[in-house]
Length: 583
Image 1: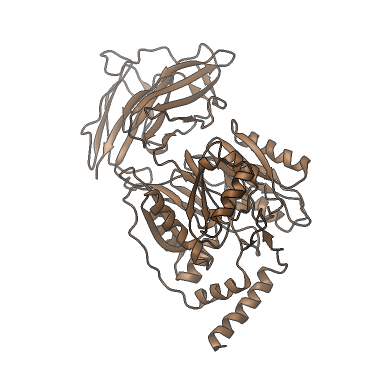
Image 2: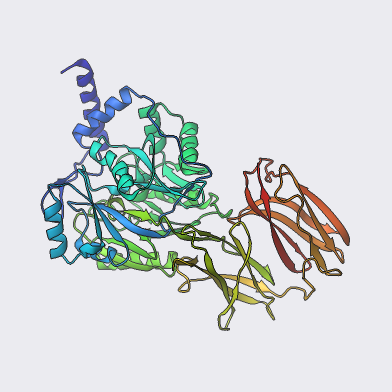
C-alpha cells in the first residue's frame, strides 16, 4: 500500500470510529434481491472521501440557466416521482403513488424483468410506470436526483449536483433522466445532497452546515462562493445554512426539519434526555426568528418523534406530492397517529397518510427514497396570505403563471364574512401575470375567510392555499369609510394616476390626488407580494402629490428588472397599479 493510500486508510478508520460508532444493520430491498447501500458512506467510500479532502480541486461546470431562475418547491405541481429498483419502499406506497403521478423507476437491464413481474404481482399499475433502464448504486433518489428550475424564458431545466457520495452510477442518473425526458441538464459540479436541501419556490432555501463543510473540504470553496453558486444555478437569493443538530450521523436537514410551505416549518421534537434535545429546541427558536420569503418570520410546528430504542422516529422525513403528504410510520399506533394529527394541523387541507415499512430508519425514511418530478407545464399561483387586522375594502393580489402557455381561463377570489356563505368574484389582470380582486367593505367588524382559484386552458387548476377549497386564509376585518373610490374620476376622494414613464429606467414618477387631508401609504411590492419600498407613510395635505421611485429597495439596493406593484392606501381604500422596470 502506498504512503498516500495508507494515510487515507488511517484517516478513514479514525473518522469511521468517531462518526459511525455503531454500524447500522444492512438493509435488503423489498423483494430480497439486493443488500442495499446505506445512506451514509461505507468504509470503502470513506477512503475515497478522504482522498477528496486531501486533494481538493475545482470542478467542471456547465453554464447556468438563463436568469432569472426560479427553483421549484416540493409542494409545487408534479407529474411524477423518481424511485429506484430494487426498492427501498413498500408496494402499498407505490400503489398510492400511481393513483396520482407517473412512477419513474430507475432499473438495470438485468433487473428489469423481475421489476415488471414484482410490480404486477403487487398490484402496481405498470401503465403508470416509465422505466429508466440504467445501472445505479443506491435507492437514495432524493440525494442524487434532480432539482427543478424554470429559467428566464419560462422553460424547465434540471439542475445536477455532484453527489456527495462516490457512487458514479447514481451520479450519472440526472444526465440520463434529463435526456430521456428531453429536459436540459445543468451540472454545477459542487458536492451536495438533496436530503440536505429544502426550498420554498420563492428564492429562499435552507441546509445544514454540511454543505459549507463539504464545499470547503472537497473544493476549497468559501461559504460566499457556495451562496453565489446557489444563486447562479438555482436563483437562491436567501440561503439559510444552520448548524446541524448532532456531531454524528449524515447531517441532512430532512432528518429533523421540513418546509411545509413558504412560511411554515415542521421540526422534530424529542424527549428531554436525548442528546439532540437542546440543539433541536435551539434550532426551532432560531428558525422561528428567521424571515421567510413572505417578509414575515417562519411559523414553527413540532412533531414528537418517540424513542425507537435510543433514537427518535423520523416523522419529518415525509414527502409532499401535489395535495398529499406521505408520512413514514414506525409501528407504534399512538405516536404514528399523533404524527398524522401534527401534519394535519400544520398543513390544513392536505390528505395525510402513513406508511409502515421495516426498512425505515431513524435518520432516513420515505423522503430520502423518492424525488418528485415537477410538471413542466404547471399552473402556479403565488400569493402572500393577508394577516392582521385590515380595514375594508381589501385588495387581494396573486401572481398566476401559466407554463402550459394555453392561456388563463379563470382567476377567482372567494370570500365569506363570519357566518355567511361563500361569494366569488373574478380577479382582474393587472399586468405581468398579476391579478387583483377585492373583498368588499364589511357591515361591521368581523373575520373574513378567502381563497384564490385559477384555471388554464389545458385543464390544470391551482389555487392558494394549495388545498383550496378544503383550506382557506382568515384575517380580522373592520369597515372602512364609505367613500368614492374610482381612480381617475374627477372629484374622487382619492385619485391615483398611472406612473410615467412606464416601462421605466432608472426612475418613474407616481402621482396621486387627495380631496381631503389623509393618512397615506404608497408602497411598492414585487409580484410575490413582498414589500420592496416604502415611498410615503404618513399624513398628507389635500391636493396633488408627486413621488419619484428610483428603482431601489428600502435598503438602497437596486432591484432587478421586472413587474412591480405600487399600492396607494388612503381614505379607507386601497388601489394598485403595475410598474415595469427594464434595466
